Image (cartoon, rainbow, N blue to C red; front, side, top):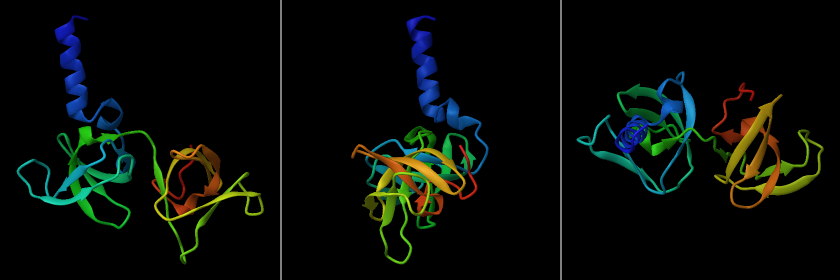
Length: 162
């Protein structure tokens, strides 16, 4: 493949949001590619910015597509549009609290397993696998691995196994 052709293919993949996102069944979770991401009220640059994310790697749920644009839902239920190139299919999840209690990161997928750490709200994790109500996660940027209840993550569906 010539240099110009390769450049064109790479540009097309970037603008389409990448091959992994183009044909995925809706809805699905993705993560924000950039540290600052504008979310618009409609699918295009002509629409006003509704809000701005300031967190690279934050998980969002893609609920619809229009061309290169993705309609997303955040962890608070807000909905807006971002360009598909601003998403990465790399899985991410955020800790959600219930009753104000931090989430225990455990050494094994069971309630009585040794606690490795307590995770606060909105701590980013990378889910490695999920099964039987537990997800094995890596705590982003902290070198910690362990298990958390699947229901305590935003970025993974309750019945999802992988």
